[in-house]
Image (cartoon, rainbow, N blue to C red; front, side, top):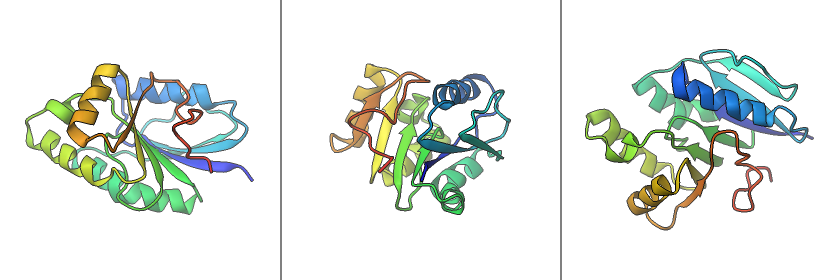
Length: 170
């Protein structure tokens, strides 16, 4: 039976977020061991045979609520074993998870939005692997969240599943 991974990209409307999703999906298009269920506001330009797209658009507080609660229910509807979130936070509910941090403002922003996301991200650390784009961001994440957290440095499109330190397939 093929493993299933839910990809939460519900806030990736355009720009860098949408580009990261497109790159990620292109890298996964020929993975014959995993089926990806992708929730995003814009249909990806190209979907692999192993990828199913679900239209889901969120913004602001809706993005946080969907990432922390709603995505888990949708992932269970599709019998997914894990969740990859591109929303800087991930589900509070029990599952294997990977959270891709694409915005340094999560750690440095002083507005209510960024302070709230920072606090809520701390709540989702259990069974969570964090992915940063640079060694600097990794250092900042470890400093903020503590050494108990798993942080990997990966560029968009790099296989974050096939890493000896991440096991979301079993």
